[in-house]
Length: 162
Image (cartoon, rainbow, N blue to C red; front, side, top):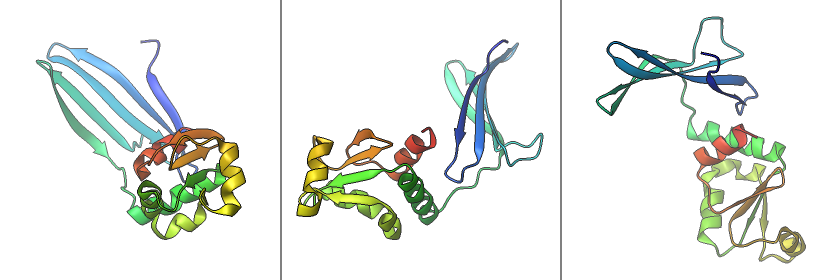
């Protein structure tokens, strides 16, 4: 094989990772293999290795190694709010918009790390008009617009690949 599908990214802690995906085939069928390593791991160590067997069109995934640690919600809120701040992200909203309020609540105590502009407030009116908003809530991350409410996990995926 000359090419292995891969994805390089930096996580919310600034650690570089690489994910790979490749196909294997043998006398008993085919499978996809997924693996991930990071720069802070020892040689030969993996975050995970998952084999997805495809038997008669049905997929069956088996984790051979799974060293991934799940972040607590508070940890995700903190790291994501800090990452968004470092990317000069702005959340445009309206005080009476339930989706704006829900977006802020998603960040819990760490919402204070975010730049939030309530466009119905006089002090934010000029900046909101400049942004040319289509509705609320609306994010701009690194100058790129992102409309609508975004769950934390979706925001995490977006900023991880920026």
